[in-house]
Picture 1 (tube, rainbow, N blue to C red):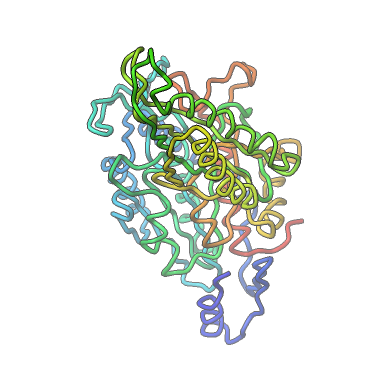
Picture 2 (picture 1 turned 45 degrees about the vertical axis):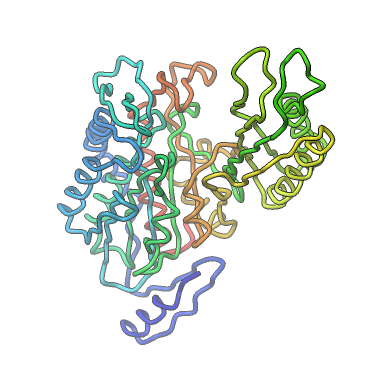
Amino acid sequence: MKIQSFSRQVCRFIGVVTVLSVSSLSFSLPGHAKPQTTVINQKVDEVEAQVIQWRHHFHEFPELSNREFKTAAYIEQYLRSLGLQVQTGIAKTGVVGLLDTGKPGPVVALRADMDALPIEESSDLPFKSVQRGKFNGKDVPVMHACGHDTHMAMLMGAAKILTDMQDDLVGQVKFIFQPAEEGSPEGEVGGAEIMVKEGVLKNPDVDAIFGLHISAATPVGKVLWREGGIMAAVDPFKIVIKGKQAHGAYPWLSVDPITTAAQTIMSLQTIVSRELQLLDDAAVITIGAINGGNRSNIIPNEVELVGTIRTLNEKARDHIYEALPRKVHAIAQSMRAEAEITLPLDYHYPITFNDHALMKQVLPTLTRTAGEDNVVYSKPVTGAEDFSFFQKEVPGVYLWVGGRSPDITEAQAPAHHTPEFVVQDEGMKLGVALLTNLTVDTLFNQEQP
């Protein structure tokens, strides 16, 4: 925990070196009373209509990863209107606003992702996207098909409330609007990893970070939480199997990379089913593409396999990193072929890991904000999130907030990353309240009644 700069502030302002607990971020700030929950709830009610307007704007005018130029300008203008210190151009299009109360205290960061996806929207929303963009050189439709429009709107709402209350707060708050969570275009870098490298968690040094993701499958009003791994690490890989070309009528003259590839694919599945202790955490190895050959009667020289690995703990990831080349090379040798492996292929997201101490500390905040019946312990998911790069540097907590209408079942809810994806505006109210209360409680870090 980076607490040195805060300790120096305490010395300057109150002449007392407060003893800080690394595990609980325990700060004692005499003379500063934490804003009441009733006041925060009222402010959440007041800003809700504006949050919905922001969401509709972002949804109607989405932009792809590393191309969020108009989105960033819109956010920058609003943050400046709040009187915040604003930085732009971080990781190409990222925007960061800093609220400095001028009083000693922790530094809390809140993050929202900005990018949309190359998907054509099929909804009948009045603010439906009809935008188009360029993705890897191709003209494509653009849609917020994962809820990033709601994430930005919720964070802007929290920024409004916290700025309005800054006279009653301590410490500092960073509002991080991140580009390229969905991955950068070919030949580019971006996202949370680059923001971290460019110092987004420094000057001032962040003590804790929070992020939310809206869920199309979770009912409005619910919040899902979990200690430890909540989303998987992702490791793409490529395998190139090299053989010897021959006529399909004379396979004995070949070293067949296609049959070698088939055996390899089946064998890789036994890493998960036969080598990992699945009672601890799940893992996935998926081959998503096979490329090789061009005629029915020609055995090709080589076959390319491209896939992804998803793991929820480092032990499982380390095992797969050892087992995958072991299996691939052994099978290739048995078939007289050769194999080349690239792992990871082009990027890697760590496990989205909720810090145990911080999660325990803020769990009462979730209960007080959403109501005990609406706080649900979640199973981990094998999707991935580059919020994990922030969590590798500072303690962080990532949560799921419900966006499903009560009129449909979970089975009827459209999936993320699909043309049918939709979430309800009403779900954002809880998100704004959570971001605000998590920040306030962490800034003051006192036990809740």
